[in-house]
Every structure is written in C-alpha cells, then in structure tokens.
Image (cartoon, rainbow, N blue to C red):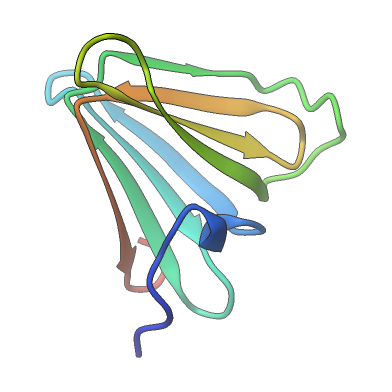
Length: 106
C-alpha cells in the first residue's frame, strides 16, 4: 500500500536509519523509516559534497526535524540539508536528487 506522495514536509519525524556514500558512484543514500511500516530513500546522484555533524546539541535523537532544499552555488547543483531533532545537520550537494518510497526499511 502506498501512502501520500513524499515531500520534504512528509519527512518530519521520520527515523534516519542509515547514510550510505558510494565514493566511486558519487552517490549518497539516506534511508528513513516513515510513519507505520513505510520507508523512504533520499538519493543524491553526482554528489560533490557531503558533511554531517554528530554532536547532538539538542540531545540524542535519530528523528528528522526539517528538510531544506537550496541551490548550492552558481552551478546546476542542488543542496539538501536534513536537520535532525538532535540539532545535527546532514548536508549533501548533488547534481540530482530522487525521493522515493521503498518497501520496509529500505
């Protein structure tokens, strides 16, 4: 069963399960558990930058607070920032992003 269409707003309170980087493929995958038994995969293709903090300034949490999209620079790249409820931020710059629902936990 498929739920409502995925958007940045639908990722609020999702649980971050995994961040995978393929150096050779220049790809970043963020796997998230949504509400119920739904899961999502946010994939960046042609990544040029990935950064993250894991300091938990707001206290420990593996839940998403907010997802923000932006143009990263003068190129055609797009940036995405995943702000966690811990206060940490995962930032990815890529040529293209796809957000899709996947089965189970990805």
